[in-house]
Image (cartoon, rainbow, N blue to C red; front, side):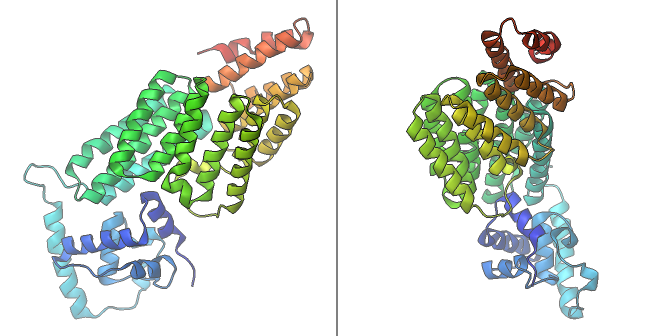
Length: 416
């Protein structure tokens, strides 16, 4: 009996528990047939865990209605291979289904259709494309605009939501899109815009009653506070992330929140609290299981924790430890996380420079430029490179290698 990983991932994408999916399926059956459905959490458990491999009749219709796609796209065997159903039952059921489908397809009295779960799924799939673009290039204006457009569409659609559950899902989608826009601004160092958008994302997360969205917003708020040098707010935001239901349920999110707390303490040179929070982050990550999660958190794991560990040690004036952690991060970071790898290389160069290895530090930043392929650099990376250049000339103002580095790269990292 093999688990249906596709269905489980679809449920995770929508944030649906087994009980909630059963409720959605029952609502779909009532809309289709005019009679209440009888799906239960146990019925959904059978679907997810492979006990039911070929849903037929009412179950099949409810699944396709809720997810807005054919059964084969949900990880089930082709309906064509399913055992034959009782012809009388099938004829009665699909007669009711056809009549209801006509009613659903017909426009509402206002001329506008009802918005359902299929719309939520479509909007969520759009967020995955933005996440992939961010991982490759980083924050930029086009990404921010696309994210805000997605949020605006979700907010507009919630006015025609088929149910309160769909309305909350749309508020959740809008919150995540707005958080994506805010993150793009953080990465591009557009800090005032990021602050406004994070406030809106948190409001939408509250309307959605979505602890996952709240966790995401608090995580970004902690990062923004660090960039604004408001370290007290950064610690408070990361501690708020720790208290969300998402962080309490899933050790991976708890680990991320503790890592952000460690950076906040390290920024204030509070060594013991920083190392203690870092230990909590490592312990929580060791407990995290490999389960489906939203695409936005795909950046976090052992590699990212190593990169954040390097930041903590750098802030605590421990460049040798920062260098070692950066090497661990680079060894584990996936190749498609191009921006993250390049930024980790710059942090590594900074740690090498602080240990007096000017030549190696300059060569490492060269690798970062090469990795970005001559494309525009995110604002955060440009800031890091500016810090590197200042450190380079403070340490070795007359060094030939330093002058050559400035001649070769100054234009690239300073262009805005």
